Image (cartoon, rainbow, N blue to C red; front, side, top):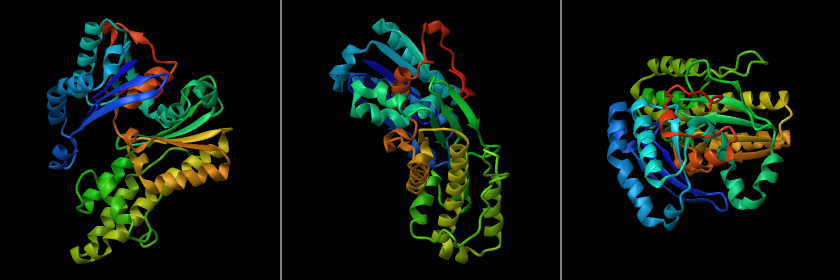
Length: 345
């Protein structure tokens, strides 16, 4: 039994994972309502809320799950993320591991996202996961969130290799900033998606930031700038009337850029599967478009469940078990790394 803690940003999360069953239970305390008042995450407030909620959340897990008594390892996110938030989680995990007398595991948050699309595959047939997972390799993964947009490969040797990143804004950041320009609030991605469902994707011509045909890197800063220039030419009344179309066209530009780069990567490598993870992976338009891309390429498609797209402890627990690069450490050796990259462990 493995217990995991996640406190990298504005979600305090705990999960229990049993390799013979999957994720037993998980608990999340969200700070979205708090940070929504300020239009984005405020680091000091996020740290304070973790400090206030991590112990009560662990107590709730202990009281509500008999599996808590069978913990044999403790895992915690060590980066990337906000330094103060990471420090709260790692300090709590160290204390818990010491009190239980069990090993401690530090997990790369991004590698949690990388493995999250396979959580459901494991849950279906835990005893056959190793064989079914091997049949999916080499795997092409797309991580899309407010802070990261990147493509990576997961080879038959189980090593992760970064294929491309964004040169400026991440996709989620572009959606949030676009929503702010439109006066929609925070978090912007879900708000844009909701309004986009009623609009036309071809009403406005926004740049895709594609670049050269062989280029895999992403770029979204031009998209945000294009929206700002367009809105400066419109009256408030015109913006309000065109809001669904603006959202639909803007969102489609993000989706097209993500899908086209993923398609190009699929053409360049002999992949057997493609995965989608990260907070923006919850966008239904993106999920559907990427699934169609996988079908055309005749490869399997795996998307993280909605509960595992944002910051969550379930993916941290699963990565601590499934990622062969993760290793147990002593409490004194565990250090946070706010700038940790996907390729690092």
